[in-house]
Length: 124
Image 1 (tube, rainbow, N blue to C red):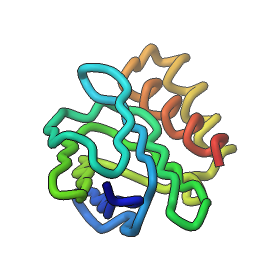
Image 2: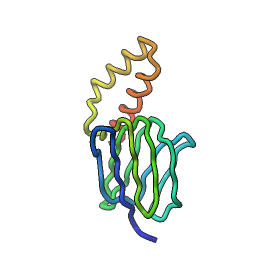
Image 3: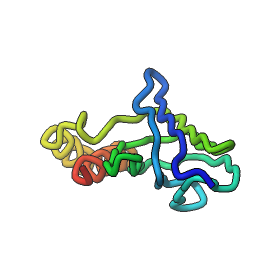
Image 4: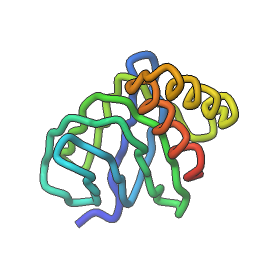
C-alpha cells in the first residue's frame, strides 16, 4: 500500500491545490468521508463544507468547498468543486459581516456559504 496519494483540488475557475497527502476529509451527500492511500475507488457528490488535507510533509491544508464531485482511483483523488478557496485566502472579518447580513436577510444559502468559509478559515 502506498504511503501517500496525489490530490488535485480544482475549482471551476482555477487549480486551488495540488500535491501529495496522507489523508483527505471531505463532506459528501452520504456524509463525511476520509480518504487515505489505497482507498477503494469512489465517486461522490461534494456538499458545502471544509475539506481538510493532511499533506505528506506533516502540514494541513484547509479549503472551503461549495458543491462539486470527488473521485478516487489509482491513488489519485480529484476534488472538482464549483467554488473552492483556501483558508488563508478567506477574509474572516468580511465573512463574519456576510454571515450577519445573510442571517438578517433570511438568505439560507448565503448563510451556509459564509458559515463554511468561517469554519475553513478558523481551522487553519
